[in-house]
Structures are given as C-alpha cells and as structure tokens.
Amino acid sequence: MKYKIYGKTEKKVSAIGMGGMRFNMEKPLQESAELLHYALEKGINYFDTAPQYHEGKSEEIFGIAFKQMPRDNFFVSTKLMPERITNADDAYEKVCLSLEKMHVDHIDFFHVWCIRKMEHYFDAMRQDGLYEALLRAKDEGLINHIVFSSHQQGDEVQKIIQSGVFEGVLLGVNILNFPYRWDGVLAAQHQGMGVVAMNPLAGGLIPQNEDKLRFLTSEGETPTEAALRFLVGCPEITVALNGFSCEEHIDMACEVAENARPFSEEELNRVKSNLTDSTINICTACGYCDTCPKDIPILKYMQLYNNRVLFDISEEKMIEDMAFQHEWGLLGEDNSWADACIACGRCERSCTQHLPIITRLKDIAKWEAASKKPLKV
Image (cartoon, rainbow, N blue to C red):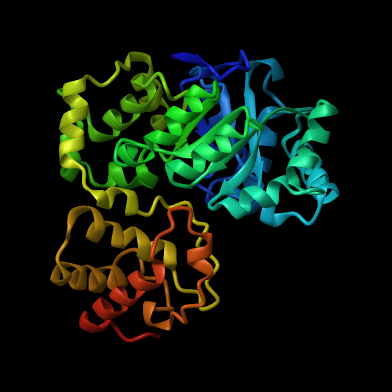
C-alpha cells in the first residue's frame, strides 16, 4: 500500500480509503464489519462514513469493527450537514452520538458535509452553528481535524479553501470529470490541505461501462484499474475513497495502489481528447435525491440517464431500454413512474451534481410512454 501525508497534519494515510456507503445490506452487519478488518490487513487505514449512510447502519458497522481494531492503527472520518442541525448544542450531541456508535474516543477527520452552494457554507459558519460545535469538540479532544466536503464548481470551492478554516477537503473528482474539477484540487494543495477524492469510479459508472471506456486504459489494465491508478498516482490527491462490498474489490484496489504509476502526459492527453462536457453532468449515485413525495425511483432513473448523457444513446434506444428495465431490469419492482413528477424540486435541491432532474424525468416519461409500458398490477 502507498501512503501519503494528509495536508499539514503529519498523519500518514493510505492512498486507498474505505467508504461506508457501499455495503451489501442484505448481509449481517457483522459480515460487513469484517470487511474493515480485511481492509486494515491489506494496508488501508482511512475509513470514512456518515450518520445517514445505510440509514444509520454504516456507523454501526464501523463500530462493530472498531471495537476489535487497535485505535492507533487507523483513522476515522465522519460528517454532519449544516442543514440537519438546529444549533451548536444539537450538533455537539450528534458528534457525541457518532463517537458512541463507532466506539471510538475521537474522530480524526470531521467534515462539514455536502456543501452544494455557498449558503450551506455560511450556514455552517453562523453563530451557534455547526462549525462552532466542531471547534468545541476539537477543544475537548473529541475531534482532531475539521475538514469539509463539497460538490461545488472550482471557483466556489476555492473561496471556502481560502477561508483557512479547514484542514482538508473531500471532493467528487475522478478520471471522467477531472478537467472540470481540478481547480479545486489545486487550490486545496496550494493551501496545504489534504485532498480526498470521492466517487473515484463515478458511482459505479466506470466498471459498468468498461467496453465503452477503453480509451481510459493503457496496456494490461481495465478502465476500473486505470481510474484508480489515475487518482493514486496524482500527487495532488491524498486518498482515493472507495466503497467496498466484498474482499475481491479490496484486493483489486490495493493491488492497483501498490503498483500505481502516474499518468503520463500522453495518457492524460488521450483521455482528455475523448472526454466531453457531458462528463460533468453524470449521476454519481450518491442517493441524496431519494426525497421524492411521489416515490419516483429518481436514483435509478438518473443512473439510466447516464447512458444518454455520456454515450449519446439515441432516443429510440432509450425507449427500448425503458421497456426492458421495467419488464426485467432496474425498474421492475417500482410502481411509481416518471410521469408522476410534480416538479416540487426536492430532488434538485439535494442533488450533489446540480443535475436538471426534473427536465430529465420529463424525457424519461416521454420514453416510457413510447415504450408501451406494461400494465401496473
């Protein structure tokens, strides 16, 4: 495993980190917890979660594992959204709850979570707000480092970075969107901050479309391996944060990290020449849009729409795909269709990629109508 120093903290973290939102929740929690033990054995020492992952079960899984792991051998990261706390006391209590659920006496990296626009940052920094609570927790030794996660464009990320109040940043950056996100990465590096890259495989889009993404690779590697090598090999990136659901995925990521070499200028130019502006507009499957009052399976729809955005799939093919997905595929168990959308905007306000979800649902509703959708039972 390769290790890098996280910003100015002197903490030596693994180039591959383990995220806590990709567990197979059909398995017992203990079985998922054993994946953390396996990851630690393979050299991974950076573990990231959040209170809302898997409806709160992720921190519980971490706690089961951490009780049996030497505390000096790993770093733990978790988060809170400014919009999900009422005041500093409420935020402080939630910090304590995370500590309790994970069975640790301190959290190494605590994120002001999911800043999607500047008003979220201002909310976090207000008097009697989240940042005030995190400073109190840090003074008491409950937190080591206050950091933030952002889904903004580069110029807004830079403003927060330059405020100087954070020691690190978690950014959605990968081999498909890096030309549009790199300003934020460079700004963080210039400030001496640690940089953790989330969604290194674009929310599963890369492994699911390897045949169409061969241009990412060099000889002897898959597109998935190339995507991980890109981040691990970048000196500007401290940790490539992966979600794992089995030991085989951990093995692959660790092997890539062990042998990773930086992309050459020729390789980068080849990748850039094959990318389009559409790569910034793909759904990364974070799931924050799961707020629909009509129970529309927005996340599933946006994953299907990725094919349209990234590969310019024709409308005729999208119509065929909708028919297949409802009969045999991803949408087979869903009874709420895209035409049920009332344009309330909840999903768009939650979207970390700022996608035009309502407009896309209108397209999907049109394709569903043309696909002669099967009768609902």
